[in-house]
Length: 317
Image 1 (cartoon, helix red, strand yellow):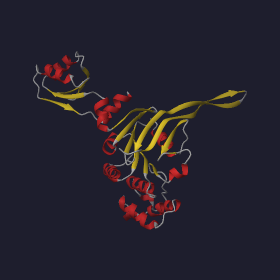
Image 2: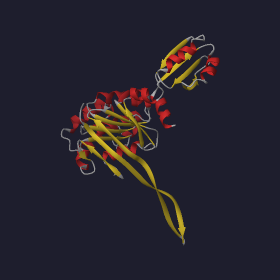
Image 3: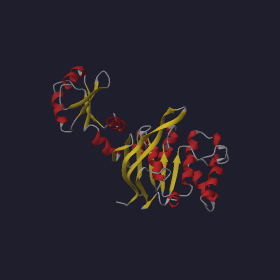
Image 4: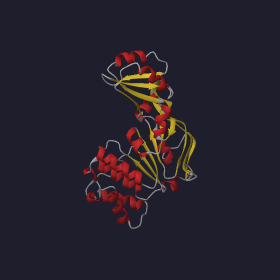
């Protein structure tokens, strides 16, 4: 197993939030309170791993990656990239990472080519025309290189933003919601592109499909805390219910009434007139379910794999 290239240790971040104003002798005094955005977050990311940070809006995803990049200072805790503290080696670290915050950091009144040329000059990249051509061909934008970005579709802007993040060939990519708002075709294009890259990649998303498709490991983040870190399959298997069974029967109402009284049944979910999902507490309870259903006319009975969305809802509600 490769050495971790990113180490996040006990990161905590508070913001000062203006709450109200006090009036004392005709003077206004703002009142602030502390808002906890991240609480004691720790994890390690291996080289060339695609690591997902999955959570709803307001979970702390963007705050976390800004802390990793060094764009925010933590209240406590530390981040190391390539065994160097980000806080003490900020400018050196910036050469190693490429950052994409949606479609920001691209200029809409410049052409796609001019945007990338601008960043080539910032990073002092030799033979910039060759590098720009490589990147625009990579993201299928070369044909539109001389058009103003303001005329680009949302998908094209996202591709250009990704090209900008790659301009200096960084070891690490940090992408905040890279597929947000994209149609299916462009979303799949970017996901497939990321999977082919020989880079360490951090992706924040609230899209379960993206996390499941692209990431080798996922951190589930909610209200500033890490709930679980594992690969998508293990998260589905370990966190939700040990087993979900779909039953199809003409006597589904009678079966549902009977199963409600069984202690090994965690939840029942009616799917349609003849189908029922039975959520069991443990894998061993499957045999108990078979004994009960043997007394009924059953058209079909099969195990169902829970989705990441079901897992996340189970953890956060």
